[in-house]
Image (tube, rainbow over all chains, first blue to last red; front, side, top):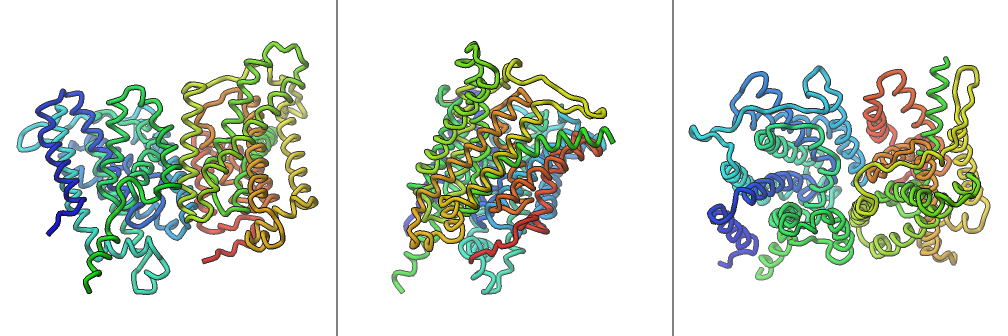
Length: 316
Length: 301
């Protein structure tokens, strides 16, 4: 049995991440924490954009809903962070369903514009401080932290294990999902929605489910972000952040999990390695998006599902 | 009543700017079935180019004000039109036979590139148009104040829209544009050079955007590299409101959106006005995606 390139990649990555903390400073640990947070967000958006092909460029809205749910409930009721992570995920998933159900039928480019609008609506709502819940432009303070068997998660290294542990759990789940009935239905909808509908897939439900799952993961990531930053404000959830996530998924190769990890690494870690690169980052990513569509539309690390399937069929 | 009329004047002013930008979206969409996500950034580039002309070459030229403004506008317009043609050639033409979403991603890439280029060139902070450049004259008619700048914006936009409408309806080149909008292949069989038509579209659209950019800079005085997206999104809403692909629709949609926005800001809440605009966009796309004047939007499968 040959090991697929996906598994190879993940094994190398896991080995590197396990030994890394013994060699680098807290500063680099922190960089890797933000890389991991972006991997979680990128993977959640990849469910929507990559697996089902729905162009969502307002994903930060769901991340914001999760972070604010955590901050508000933690401040008022002091609920345990693990519970809040679940609650935030559920609230975001619900928002993902409610907000996108009426617009699900829209064509790709229209859907993209509407999700940009949704992102702005959520951000402006947070700034306007409805019912005195969101703290307005200053945002909210999060005092509580995760606790893991009595250990308070607050040092960079604690967050490092928390974030990458979550990535590992999520990866396991997503790989299972890709191979499941739902995962195959999603890809079918992406490739040809009409044909998918004709074979009995409820495309509307498949799309809603993707939005709920993607929004839910982003919301749960919002909890981690809130405890890491300790202050959250509308400035963290701008349209530009949504564009960055969208670029991560597209550049990595839509539907490709290693692609998301690589592209978010390029987005978060490269600017730290090369200081001069930091200010040109989005400029170069914009250029890369154009060049990639022309020369390599399948992305950095293309999703291998279809080619694998074809090879399996060769012997029959 | 006075308040209502004032808001109406303000609404018509921003609406005229939206309409000029919306024309660019609608023309590209009409001919290529592509939402040009970089269009708002052409507008932003026009605003910055006009600013640069005003603060450098034209700052102490000693020419009369109207000539200075005209020169700044013309140079910004030519610069952005060239940029538009270049972008189409480099980023959109190679993708004409690819999937529509590939072109959308490419357009997003161009948008990111232009925004960040503007940030690197002009800085991340707000830049201010020089105060001497904007005419200060203001009249009061029955309590409603209306400035020369507002009249200029409305007058210039209206003149440009009428000129564009006549160009598309009455000239041979306009006929070629309309024919290409209906069917590329048939147009080609009739001897129309489709590439040239698309180049023409990418001269006119960005040029109108650039003029809107300079006018807005003179009106609000402050510009920022992110204005492309915020105004672009509103102009896109205006284009949808009027019926995308439809030139008179873009004008009607732009003016209507401007009025709705300013009345909403005046009577309901200024802090929530953008939420109202994007809410209108969402409701429109759900209930009447063809807009007010768009009737023939048959989707080919």
